[in-house]
Length: 264
Ligand code: SAM
Image 1 (cartoon, rainbow, N blue to C red):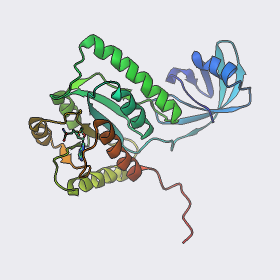
Image 2: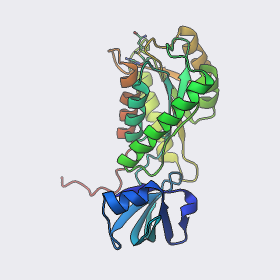
Image 3: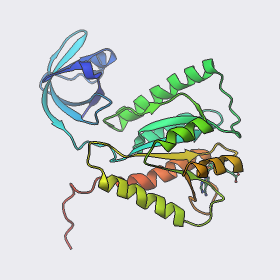
């Protein structure tokens, strides 16, 4: 089923007004017709609005809301990836894959060993580009929300932000053993299980750039109760590490209640 994002204001009662580039996509690319069904998200509430196309005009496709799927595709925990600014265009790959894996928000972090230095003007255009990557990946993976890519933060500001979250960890290649990692994953699972739906738990993950984190940055993280955790005995590239821990969390958190009991 085709999936589209609209602004919340375009959902009015049981009428959904699709405008802009999606109109041409529906008319001329997908060649859809009235009566066909599509799914729509407003990018923020995590709901999946299932609609039927009513009329296809030049500038607007009018849809009739059929029903709303509450238990959409979003993870029960909002994961923020604090990504040390990587070299070249790795950030685009990281964003695309993190969105597919269910990340909620991405914060680029200018850590001490980042080779890339972004001034305000460069950062603004980079974030605009990265946000389009996020939106395209959200559409392709039929996410109900479009993960936000925030403006780059310093490590201190990022840690202060993470301190407001329910839990955060900093994968560190010099962390000893997997016990802290297991503890972190278990605590995230518990947060999801205890969540009553009104407030969605928030979790932060810090990934260093190619040069990794300095000892001072790790110490600062520990002061803010951000636990260093190992992702195994191998050194992962910066573009692999975030996706590795996101895959573990996605697997642990993915909805299973709807599945039929397996035959024993
Ligand atoms: N400076 C490190 C070195 O050369 O040994 C490599 C840093 S690695 C390329 C980039 C980031 O990935 C690290 O800052 C860390 O966040 C994460 N990372 C990579 N391998 C890891 C591992 N085995 N355990 C935990 N984190 C890891």
